[in-house]
Image (cartoon, rainbow, N blue to C red; front, top):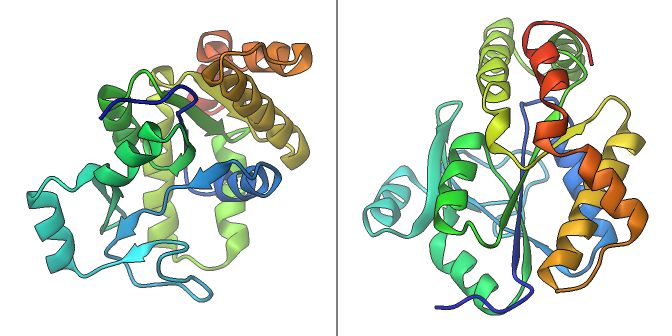
Length: 226
């Protein structure tokens, strides 16, 4: 199945608590052409979540069967539950020239990049510091100390893979973080559609390139603040 011109897989990853969900929802609300890729998961729904809208909630047996049949473009364990992206969903979207937002971790992003390198653009959301990330996690008041510790260890591991991403967005301030994410998306959207991006979007996207922000990412990894 070939990809129609204009197809785009906009992959966004971040540690838990870095603000990815809020930023992605805002981007989806502003751009009607961008569609959210609904993942499959074995975890139970949280209050307010809807099957087929937030996730496809399936049993462990169903997920295992799907994985064995090659139904996933990528899947991984996250905090003891499995999450996966439907392969046929991605293929059909690209064949139709659609723009798809994937909210997945770095392991899933690696597989998407390997399988769909021409269409995939990877963005990682950076917290200002690991200390601020910890404060955000504690501010939720929903997780135990053990869960928070696990999330922080995973966050450090995830940050260590920043080099594989095309772009790094710094979410110190929600409005500024969103300005960066939106600029990157609009620049990549223009590229996918064979047109020039607006100068402001192109300039902002360039400053967010991973190679331009490697020093900043390393500082955060070492326990400093951006």
